[in-house]
Image 1 (cartoon, rainbow, N blue to C red):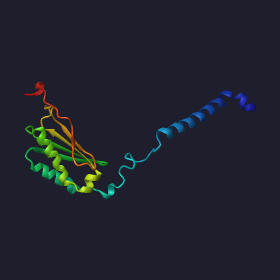
Image 2: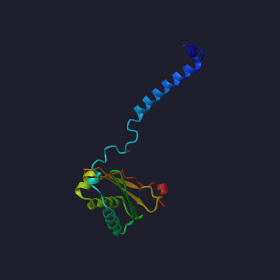
Image 3: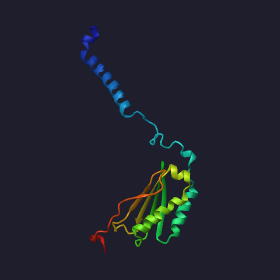
Image 4: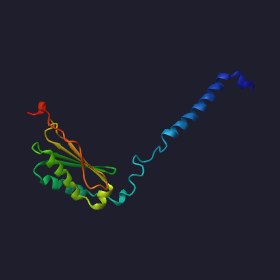
Length: 159
C-alpha cells in the first residue's frame, strides 16, 4: 500500500493504459468482426462448380471481333462479375451497340448465366463523343440486360 501511495501517478497511468487497451480491443472487435476473412464473404460459395473457362472468353473475343464495327474486346472476372469491355467504331449507334453487347450471352451456358453477373461496357474509339460509353448489366438469374440511360451528343461537342 505504501508503494501505491508513493507512486500515485505511475499506478494511475498503468491503470488508465490497461483500461484504454481493453476498450480499444472491444471497439476493434465491434468494427472489424471478420478481420481477415475473404472480401466476398460467402457470396462465392459454389463458384468452383460453375467455372468459366479461358476458351469461353476467347470465343467471346473472336466472335465479337468478327463484327466489322468492333475494334477491341477485353474481359475481366472479379468475384461473380464478368466484365466485358467492347470498343466500337465511331459510326455505331446506341441500338446497334446494345445488340452487340447482348450477343455475349450466347457464349455462356445456363448454369453460368444463373450464377454470374455480366456487365458489358461499350465505348467508342473517339472518346470526345459524349453519347458513349453505355453500360449493360445482367444480374444472375435474369434474362435481359439493363442499360444505362441513353445520352445525347451535345451541340458543343458535335464537330
